[in-house]
Every structure is written in C-alpha cells, then in structure tokens.
Amino acid sequence: MSSHATYRQPPRLEREDGETRQVGFELEFSGVTLDETADALNQQLNGRVVYQTEAELVLEIPSIGKLTVELDWAFLKRKAAESEKSGQPEEWLKPLSQAASLLVPVEVVCPPVAMDQLERLDPLIDILRKLGAQGTEESLIAAYGVHINPEIPTLDASCLYPYLKAFSLLQWWLVEAHEVNTARKISPYIGLYPEAYVVELIEQDQPDMDALFAAYLEHNPTRNRALDLLPLLAELDEQRVQRAVGDAKVKARPTFHYRLPNCQIERPEWSLADSWNLWCVVEALADQPEALDELGQAFLDARIPLIGVNRRSWVEFVDAWLKDHGLV
Image (cartoon, rainbow, N blue to C red; front, side, top):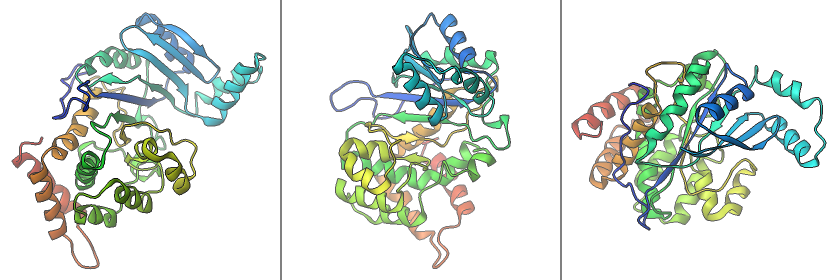
C-alpha cells in the first residue's frame, strides 16, 4: 500500500443517533525528539501550541484538531505537569526529557476523526516519515505499535457481543495478517484472549451486558490485550472495572482499544490504512450474524480434547474462509 492508500469503510458507519462514527489513532515511534516532532507538525500543518510541558505538547491543527505529542513515560509526564502547574519549572526536567527521548518512544495521539475522512491523517504520516521517525523494527526490544480506537456504534450488549465474538475468532489470523513483530509478540502488551474465553463467548447466546462484563473481567483483568475492552466497559461502569483491575491508566471512553498493529512508519509504502483495513475485517464479520455463527461452530468443531484448537491450522482455515465469504 502507498501512504495514500484507500481506507476501507465499515458496514456500520453511523452511530444510532445518525452521526458518523469516529476513530482515534495513537502512533509510537523513536528516532526523533519530542521537540523535533512538535516543530515539524506545527510548521508543516499550520498548527499552534496550546499546551506544553517538557514531556507533552498539545497542538491545534486546523485540518485535524487537537493533537497530542508526548513522551511515553508516566513519571516524566507527571513531574512535568506538576512543574508546569506550579509555575516554577524544574531545571532538571529539560535534560531528563532530552535523554528520555533516546530511550522511550514518542507518541502522537490523534484526535477522533470521522471514519469516512481518514485520509486527513495521511499528511501527518508523511511528515513524520520524512522527519526520520522509526517504528516497530527500529529495535529488537522495541514494542512500538499503532493503537486504533474505533467508536462503538451503540453501547449495548447486542452490538458489543458480535464484535467481541468476531475479534476472538479472528485474533490468531490477525496476528499473521498484521505480520506482528516478534518483539511485540513476546511483549506483555498485546496478549490475546485465552481460548477458554473464546469458547465461553461462542457458547453464550446473546448475553446481556452483565454477563459480558463478568466473563471479560474474569478472563482479561488487564489492559494488556490486543483488543483492550476496559475503556469501553469503564464507560459503562468504571467502579466495576477498577475493582477488577485497579489500574488508574484505564480511561473510560465508548471505543474499542485495538493495540495489535505494528507501526512501520519508516516504510515508504506504509499507511494507517494498512492497520485500519484489517480492523475492518472484524467490523465486517461482526455485521454478518449467520457467518459469525458459522465460524464460531467451526472453531468448536476444531477443538481437540485436552489440547484445544491447533493455531496454525485455524489460521489457514480462517484465511480461506474469509476469502470464500468475500470478507477480505
């Protein structure tokens, strides 16, 4: 794909109120400093700085909206914010920020963009690439990725369940389709749903939200999932989520938090469309209940007692099945 590839449209493009669904992207990379990143985006996209510390900047970009550039280090962000609030900048923060840029990724957090206008983000990727941003493959120990935050069409169990079921059945295939980097596969950040949870989802028949909550938190009490549902569940009941995970980093919002894709921003042919279009396979399957039931039954049929489903065989089956059903 080129950096201006076509973005696939999901079957459900609108929320129940008729407004176009939105999606936010987060990109992690290294090779450039926080200031270099902010300066380039500011100058080339006619932006202006509306908030700044030694660890974080917020830019107002006319073509996109408010965009955050930050160092992905909670300690530094907290100390820098405290210093800014006090009005007495700590002299040691600047050199620490510069040193940190060599060790921790810079993260660009894009504002929500309408799903039918994602090409507005292409110039952002071009600027970062020309600046020298390096993504997932920059280091053997790096686990940089692209996070996608698609707004759920309706915040209820009848909508959420098919998405969860679709992703669960596709998760092994998606790892291969995204060509997930080895360093990211072995990192703790993008764990997949346990097979026992996938089976429980399939065997549930249109569960209500309480049942979805209970099963998810039992099997996945962590943010470190390829499809992290905690922000969405926290939007419904933040106290229940916090009782299960006790993690202040969980931020409530009515979106999925898809963490699986690599960030390959240094590649000339790479685009956010690479990541987005594969997520849209989940969107497409979730919108086809008969096909979803068929694939779920195939997963149950593929289980071997005491062993489970053979991952390699399932990926090969899913790849052919998706093509036969016109979903890829």
